[in-house]
Length: 225
Length: 209
Image (tube, rainbow over all chains, first blue to last red; front, side, top):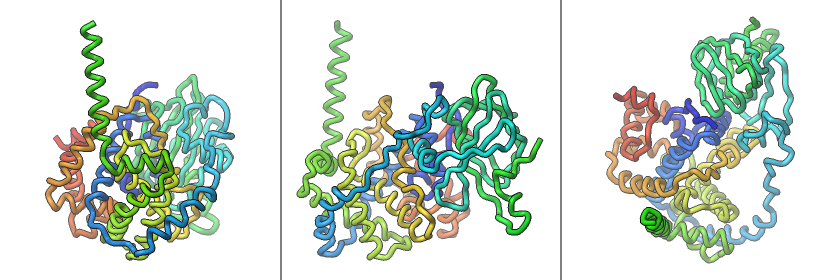
């Protein structure tokens, strides 16, 4: 596996470690971390800062029955523990799913994958994570195919999961974490011999109601070429 | 032959160092809980960490003492359930417990916001870090450095870090709350992380130069 070249910035990893990212953004960071030992180490260090702050914080005494309360629950939580979801079970089969972060496999399995074609070489499947501000989705570009030129109404984060693609700024490989600011226009093209699957996080645009609302679904904001 | 024996003594040395680093009492207790389902060990951990968690969760955030105590309990129950997955060579007990508390807080905030919880923070923050290439010796050294250096951070840098970790605030929220320009917040964070040996990306280093 070639080394991952594009990484989230330190501020993003700090927010991840502190728990202030939105769920979709956190999924994108987790997906990158799966491929990137360097950022994993950095995240562990950032977590250790949190751990040290916890260890040095001022203790506030808890109620007298707090411990007994919890002790009484220990045996029941052991037995009543919901079956841990077997994330790898029933994961989708095929090449493109082989080296995917377990988290993404789990999301795909739980939501079932329902692809929607945006053009002859690009399709998209939403992954629900229960939030409105950002949308999480998989994009798949056919080998050698291109995505329609599009601009961004909001921030876009892309993590390459399988294959590679390029645009006017470079070539992106598995694990690369690419951030695009609003207003940036680009035309991603998949590498000729393999299809490309990406995880993307899109900042949802302002939603309009009425007959124009369809236009403001971010996945329809791709401009046809 | 000589090279080989040197290598062996180096490895032995490494084993001793790791063993020493792991002898942090809380981590040992936590491993006992994981391996033996030892309730007495858990009670000792609880007495130490529950008040710290409560203090941590209350600090300056919207959580009142009761909510903070509930979340501390919830965190400790998760600690019991997941103790067998604790690995002392990857994180100290307090770091591991910190991440569990963070996840409990995220889920609690989402419950409060009535957003549907299709997925739990525990799953979101699982990045499959069973990486064999991970160098625990380096990690151990970092851990000690963080502990030492944190004690010497200037108060204004510590304040910003505390807001971010204790309250889960974003940089712009911190800037608003402290009445500081965003750039100042960012540079304090940068200075603090530098002292705590968090390596910046090449692009960030160029920016600073």
